[in-house]
Image (cartoon, rainbow, N blue to C red; front, side):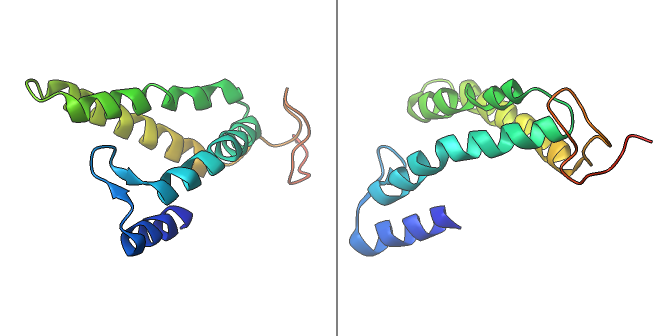
Length: 117
């Protein structure tokens, strides 16, 4: 929702940069929410008993997607980066929809207060 707000502000003020693919306000919003998004995602992964380090699986997608936009001779890198991005997004969607572990796990107590029985 905030990114849509940034895009609308960029469109209204004509600050969209076609070379980079985003405007200044959209970029500021992305940077502002980057660390909190990593934190929330790590806590969600802890709920299902997975390490928060899995959140770093998204990191290769950013330079791959950025570099593939400038690769004009071979579009294969573009399709590889998009395929990896989609695969990671599906994996995290599945994990986000998975019910948390019942009872305590190695990351702490169950936030819902359920017992392991």
